[in-house]
Figure (cartoon, each protein chain N blue to C red):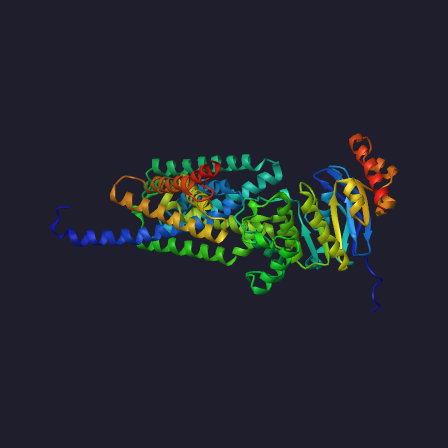
Length: 293
Length: 259
């Protein structure tokens, strides 16, 4: 920058970057915490189906309002994510398709529909439509301060809800038939937990994009599980891992232009996972190797 | 209002259960009036576990009714303790032994309330009764099969129920754990509780249970163990399963020796 008056705008940009980084960090943390129950309930891929389906809602919300307003787009994404989960349940109940096959079908079909809508909007040159592609891989540089605050608030609310119902969620995830026999509404709790995952997937869209956001709710929990044998500790660690990955992704993509945030976040999480896999006490590869000798 | 005539503790009336279109239990009529150790016996696939799950509302009834103390299960679930089959859960789950036992107190706690000192005391007592108080802090996957089964029993004890329902509690369990579990179940009976156990081993069934029901999709016979486990009844239950007929020979023999 050679502009002599450039110091102030630069400062303003970095302030926004800082707020955005904090917002995305909160999203990473929330996704890590909420994702634990997707992993513990062995429903890791269900969140992925919801994530791929969000693109449809994002595109439709844009077409309906004609504006690229983040809250509106995310509400659209959330609704289409939920719709995909509904279709998933219907497929299982009415066609007796097995869960893995049903998940694969919903994931690919809804993603195909989303891509068609987004590329249609881009190809027809609808004003403002070009930015929609950022929801594919995540692009935090485009976020405003208000966006970041919204994302952080929603993440915090989701975490709060989970922490409040931690006892019930743990019981249902560990032993659903005992939970049902002792009077807990297992199906309702399951929908609640899946809905929380869908919320985190949606607020994770700007950071990681529809294709990769599922990594935010799966990799940190699996890495955290390596280090601990207790659910609360796992939630905490997973939150920290998610936060660290998000901060890394935002920081690097802010410094290196044209690098999408999502892949960086996922790669950072993968590094944490790899380290956890090798050096974690007890469950880690190294500890098991030592025990064998 | 007249007090109603004494209701059976547990009563199945004309219970039919189907998975999809395939019926697995037909017209089961069974009433248990007195606290005792009650065995539900039958071959694999006879529908023993299904009968328990039907009683606890875990599988829907295609017909008939189940009543505890004359009431539907939903009205009296707090009085029924449940020990599911050990293989139904993931033992790698990140919870400790005492975490699992505390789950027995959750129903009484209700929504959002966390276990306090009272619940911890109940859990500790339950663990003491099954001989696991020393491993209370351990992750559940680090226990032996028999110890895991005892964790589930301790969780049911923490429910402080009047009826205990156990699904194959002796399957894949070492001899020491079997004795311990049987000891606890006997104590429960002495304390006036009804204990209903799904069990597949005829030999031990003859030794352990006061009363049994023989089931092979239908109820073959029910009543005092010695009266029910006759060669004729076993033949009808295990028809054609010759390897098991050998076992029943031994069972009846052993019964003769111990009594």
